[in-house]
Image: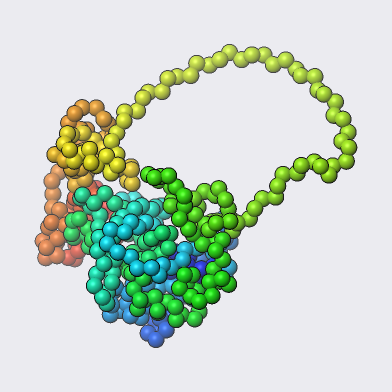
Amino acid sequence: MANDCTGSAVSTSTAITASHCLIHGGDAIDENTGRVETKKTYCISNAVYNNVCSSELYYNPEYTTDKSKDWAYVVFPKGTFKSYFRVNQAPVKQSDQVVLIGYSEDDLPRGQKPKRFGYNKINRIEPAPSNRIVTYTGSNFNAVGIGHGDSGGPMLKDCQITGLASAGDDKLHPTPLYHTNLTNPAIASKLKAIKNAYFCGLSGDDETFCPKSLAYVPANLKPGSKEFPCVVGAGNNPGQNPQQDPIQDNGGQTPPPPPTGDDDPTPTPTPTPVPTPTPTPTPVPTPTPTPVPSILDCNANYAQIRQGGSGVCLNKSSSFCYSYSGGDVHYGSGHVTCSSSGSGGSTPPSGTPPTRIDCNKNFSTIRAGGSGVCLNSSSGFCYRYGSGNVLYNSGHVACK
């Protein structure tokens, strides 16, 4: 999506995202309809689609005065998407488990945006009229968060889109994450009233426009499974890879059964070939692999870490290792070598940056002016700051 954002198919011709993803300097916006008059189009080009491009862009005019209504939609030709999510109409509550999806490039070189998903829980729902959904990530919150590139990405409850990633306040730690609540009756009524797009789960004629065989439904997974928890609806693609991207689904095409040969005429006998003796090769000894030391999982074994002891654990969501002691994981001290030897944990590699200004704790100093480099203690990476703000969007830099 635009501005390094994420979007989700909600019917065969409509994708939903965040309003702030569609706002560009110089674009004309119809404040009555939300239509964005721009030369920009968003195209899909891969093994399934040959450069299929959007036809219209619409953002929510209310977003300019109410940031809690951060939703927008993009219209594509009919039949573009071969699988999609439905929009949830059922209310959600505190402690509900949800899945967050996005194409984040945090902690990666600019432009690298791998698709990722993870679990979180609803911490609270803001009072009306906002009704924004709030989740948390950071210290003592072993849950996936949102970062640069995840804006507009879906929050799923029972494989239906319940919220859209809107904003986060990285000046606070743990970090609150705000999601536009699509179950908010005011937002749902707006989406239902739209005439030039279709939102499955909200509109009136789902039987015609939203075939059940294309909609995502909860997968029957074993407890603790790390596979994507949604599959395309029953009767479509049995046994498919549950991590398929919605726009790369094969549309439920069933391969023809293999020929049985029952209808073949009487076959001509084939002469049996005389096998040629094959010399027995000399076996090559297989080297014994060096055993890889076992590393604790920072999230899965957090209860064990809380009981005391020290060492090194692996954060599987980032593939980095961190030291732990005193009942907590020391994310703020930066990642360390993934080694399980020693009772005191691994020693950080040479070149670990010295203690310096903290991007979060010293934000008031940064706001006062000046420029330089600061350390984000939650990720262990350094960023430039100047003009009264931390320049996260420019990517992390060497801590020198």
